Amino acid sequence: MPAPTLAEFVLANTTPTPVPLVPEIVLHSACEAMELWERTQNDQPPFWAFPWAGGQALARHVLDHPELVAGRTVFDLASGSGLVAIAAALAGAREVVANDIDPLSLAAVRLNAEANGVRVTTLAADQLAGDAAGAGVVLAGDVFYDARITALVLPFLHRAAARGAVVLLGDPDRAHLPRERFTQRARYEVPVPLTLESTETRSATVWTA
Image (cartoon, rainbow, N blue to C red; front, top):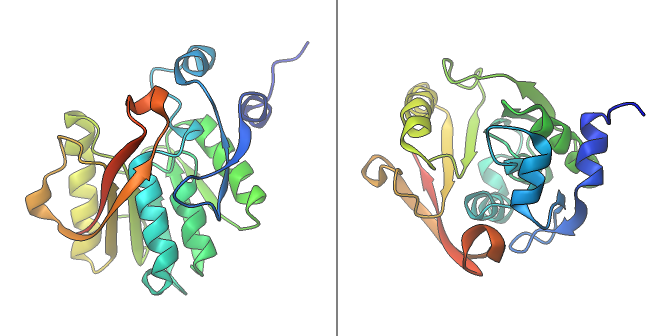
């Protein structure tokens, strides 16, 4: 029997489910993180299989404030499931690029974009040496989860902001977020999977650079 394609793997291990804080969007989501992580045989958790708190907050904010992205080009960093990218497309962005280093993530983004009737372009590989390819808006949901990643992401975001891009972040009070370098826009109470977060809700803030 041939090995499943990436898309087949995503479909076999997820169920289309409305996002708790953003029910306008349906994602192919998993129920159990550890079992799926073992199946992926990947060093990184399956970030693409769950609506994380920071991404939910940022997606909600974008949908509630479509003027932030409408008619503009958008770059979604570390896209995961594509939740934030899909929100930008639904809010009227002219073009949306979802970037992630995990091929399963990009497969999930394509499936989720199709499920929500929007067009999102996927971009593979590490793009952190650049500045989001000239996009007018840079979005990043829940990217400050460890010190090493934070040290790589911050220069990327600040280069984008320095050339005039709107930079918006969604973060659930991760310890590595340098709050003094950003300005708070909004705060949300976000329903989250108990198995992932050991709680049923998390506070998450939307920041701008």
